[in-house]
Image (cartoon, rainbow, N blue to C red; front, side, top):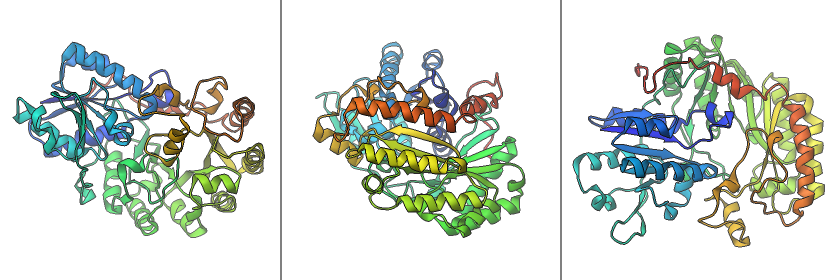
Length: 454
């Protein structure tokens, strides 16, 4: 059985083109490891699916790209009439909204669920009549037209059962992303991935070290970014990973980076990170106002903690990229000016920053609040969730969901202009990062030509 997978991305935005949707490569390796007579191709454009005509197509999408996913699904269904599966954060948060072109939606962690679905399609000509037996999916009943949500599926255990994601020369160059864990132990009010992962599950240090070793076996990366929601959630694992990376000699071959948290940082942890050549970190400072931080991060951090983390990383030689959020409910001009003052105080210690307008993603407490306000609905124009790679590209007149009653939209637009200037000043050296990543990918490699797993 030939399965075609594709991420719904906006090709005109370099940030989306340059960052592979690693989840699809985990699916590919899992299906080919545990399934039978299965061949998986991960595509970049829907035209490739129409040309190759796989037996089944799967599309992964986040909320801001759902309109693209539906458009592609309609075209594929009309021209090929093959089963279509939707996965990703959005459908996991809103399974009852499965769009019409899709036959099935995969909710949450997808590998085992998708494999069971593929096995059903391989064995049964009328597979759609037996979908109720598969945990972790939603589907449209062909008799009633209603969307049915099945019971949830337990997370894969042990996590080491999951093989390394497939890595293709046409996708990966000198800049690699690696997941060393799934989930996050925190519950920020704006964060949607927790809807999929449910809890924090780190891969063991020896598993991660072996995956890194495999990357070096077939590539020559200059940088590897741990794309975890939180890389440092298990301090003892960081220590073990440092030891293994050094034992393999990988610390002498490239730099590492990843997502950290302000409330966990101290000098000892920094020394362990620097010992494995971890040179760049990022965390969500979010605001210079403790009032806003308490709302966004449920009291787990403070402005003082953020400042302490910046100072610790700076003196230990870890370059920082911070993210900030504006437009939080209850945020006044005084609050937003505190954020500006915080950035001004620290800009000499930062490698860069990102600014985001708070968007109420489905499945989050912010979504529930926005729904009560009537600002969002289960079936709305998902383009209102579109964001840009860099804040400096955002137009203050752009139509987006805005839920802060404490500041009128016109005043907020004034601060968008201010933050665009700040963002541009701090990111002069970083604006080409995604284009740089793309240039490291070898051109002309045939799609689907993957490297052997070992």
